[in-house]
Structures are given as structure tokens and as C-alpha cells.
Image (cartoon, helix red, strand yellow):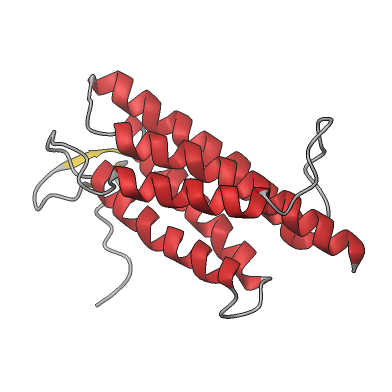
Length: 175
């Protein structure tokens, strides 16, 4: 099977439905693309971490969840967001609390830098924020309520990436 199908040469793309297509400029594709880009930035961060480390495993776990989010976004039927549950959000909150407990309290704004891993995590955080905005635009454009959990999850992920970036910034500065 060839990777190129030529079916997108007319500016359309397939949705996650056997016979449905939309324009590549559709807000649905902006949201799917932003989540895909966010997922790719996490892959770069993982490539700079020790294989099997807790952080690498958590980020890979998130990547797998993001595939499901993208599938949900590319599914045209309006339905409840079954991709994520409140437990997924609570899990990220627990990870945030765990990392944050090890950090020096913030007293000022920080620059998005601090070594290769910290900088990549900051970049991932900002792309995550854009993905969140794109999903919210999609929700508003189509007056959908089925992406609420995805928006909440992305919001929490950006917080998680912020505390992780702080952790690795402190760690990398000490090295």
C-alpha cells in the first residue's frame, strides 16, 4: 500500500467515518492538527529523556491519550466525549501535585528556558495551549458540547508541562 492516495489533492481530507470528508481548512482539521503537533512535541521531549524513566513513561501515556482525542475530534457524529473521563484529569492533577511538591515556590514570572528538556517542555506547553484553543473554537463553531473533557484535559496537561519544565530547569541548571 502506498502512503500517498492523492485524495487530498483537492483540498479535502477524510474524517473518521467511512464516507465523510471535509475541507482541510475546516475548524475540525485545525483542532486535529494542533493536537497532532502537540503530540509530536512530546515525542521530542521524550527523545531527550532516559528510556523507561517515570517522566518518559508518563509523556508516552499522554501521547496515547492524545491519539484518542484526535480520533474523537475527527469523528463527525455529535456524541458525548467518551475518549476521556474525569479520572484522566484527576490523574494529571495528581502528577502535578507530586512534581510541584518538590519545587521551590514561584515568586516571579519565569522565562521559558532552562536546558534542552525544560525548553522542549515549555514549547510543548505552548503548543498544548494552542491545541486547547483550537478545540474550543471547534466547539463554538459547531455549538458542540462533546469536547468539554478534551478541553479540560488539555488545560490540565499544559499545567503539568509547566511544572515539569520547572523541575527539569532546576535539575539541568544544577548539572
